[in-house]
Amino acid sequence: MSYSGPTNGTASATFTFTVPSNPDQTTKNGNFALNWSGNSSGSVTSAISVAAAATQTLTANFNVVNENGSPVTKCDVRDKPVLYYVACEFDGRTSTPSAQITSYQYVIVESGDVLGDSAVVSFKPLPKGCAVFTGSTNGQILTNVKLTVTSATGASNSAIKSVTFVKNGVC
Amino acid sequence: MAFVRTAALVVLLCMPAVASAQTGQTAQIPLQFDFLNPGARSLALGSAFVAVAGDATAAFTNPAGLMLALKPIEVSAEVRYRSLETPYLSMGRLSGTPTGRILDTFDKPVYGVSVDRTTRPYFLSLIVKRKNWAYAGYRHELVLQTNTFLSQGPFYKAGAFNNARLFGLTGFRDIRLTTYGASATYRVSPWLSIGEGISVYRFSLAARFAALGAQELGTEDDFFRPVDPDSAGKHSSTTQDGTGTQVAFNVGALMTPYPWLRVGLVFRQSASFLFTEVNVVPNTPTATRVGTFRTPGVMAAGVRVQATDTLALMFDYDWVQYANLTTTFITFQVDPSAANRVSIASGHEVHVGAEYALLDFPGQPTVRAGAWFDPNHAVRYVSDGSGSEVDTRFQAIFPGGRDVWHYCFGIGVPLSRTFEANVGGDITSERKYWSASLVARFGK
Image (cartoon, rainbow over all chains, first blue to last red; front, side, top):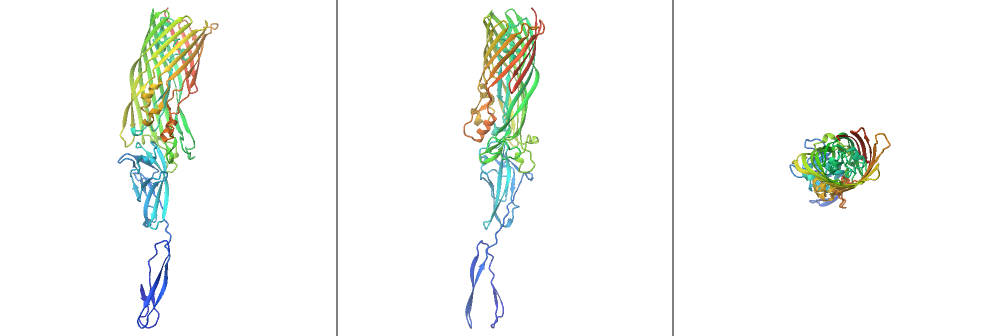
């Protein structure tokens, strides 16, 4: 709070009171009360209303690359260096605005299996081993991998990409 | 004595194109071939030849018939054309809903056909007959089949995933089974001859299969694209190799209780051969296994009735022991979880034939016709009713076959007192055989 104006007399002066921005999605209300005393005393009260924060727009986006860093639509599932190793990296760092994103989650849409919950999920084993393929023992499965990003305010956004998991001698 | 008969054989020479963890997965490709009697005459008579066996081909078919050779020395040579169609699961959809994208436009499995056509020297034999004994030696190209395969990899539904797809497959297989045999026959009495033979089977198998991925253009449609032949070796590959020599025996008898009636009996022992299968999957230890290929044993009985001076009728019954393949060659190669649900029924074949001499024609040719019932003996998977992915897949891969009738015909023409020519055919919708043989008889 700051004051500008004469330090005596009866001329008017200005009190400036700054309130922090409202991070919430609802308006915040309050009162500003000024009390004085001396030769005379008195008070004045002013209502303050801080509008809700503007709605945040998140944009989810991710890339899938292989061990050489090349963009791919297929990911091998291997048994080395660990069992059910997915030879792909899922990189969601291109999601925006990165400063407001507080969580990432990659999910296989069809089965609901979570691949990982960080911005970059690199070359990890499948969360449920071959069971993620629900008994499929051979060949390739076309999946929809969904990245969901969420902000502290609860805003979220998702992006989906088709990814083929190739089971090469593992399951 | 001895031997037998035709046997149309459908064997599963399947290719688990991946390591043991993936046994039975990728591409089971049936191997289908026929064990047919040698000789254009036999072929034309619907292979109803156990009680006929009256020429040099008896050395293989029923050695007891060697005594029926018309002259002390008889030589027979045969050339045979064959066209065999081998169906295999090629593309389509095994379960789930077609997406309509690129190859995923079929709502059922689609089968391709591998055709093997060739003309080969098929049989060569020599008979020497002395008093109550007759001897024969022969070479018989029992099986020679070369096939190539290209499967696009069918689509299927796997659990929650509508769009799963088997790997595509490229494959080559060459299998050969040649028999070198010697037979001897003794005439016990005017109405009974017995014969025994020893056969040396030479076996070779060379097969190369590789799983194929779809073409990759970097788009989300890649999953549905045709296979990329250049992806061979990136996923999995399988080889099967085997060579071997095996001795087997056959015995036979020929009885002539009446001048118009002849009865024949034969038994042919099966032969077994080992082959080595190597499965290679990138980043996975190579898996090597040894399997067994076994020819079916055969028992057969036949009668020949001389109905008139010019007409003879023949009837054969053959029991072909296909089932022993199940316990060796097949169950070894399919997914262990399905092994007890895959089977082949032993065959009960019925053969009939007729031979009519055209005495009024120059040279007195003989016309022949026949047919035989070839019961379904394809490898068949019996569903467990679960509708699971494995169950669905094996139903598509091993749908079983069907009963088939072979229709046969031919003619024999004496070219001189020494030479006789025969031609014959054996026709079904999927298999066709044409044969020409020349028989030379010497001595008095």
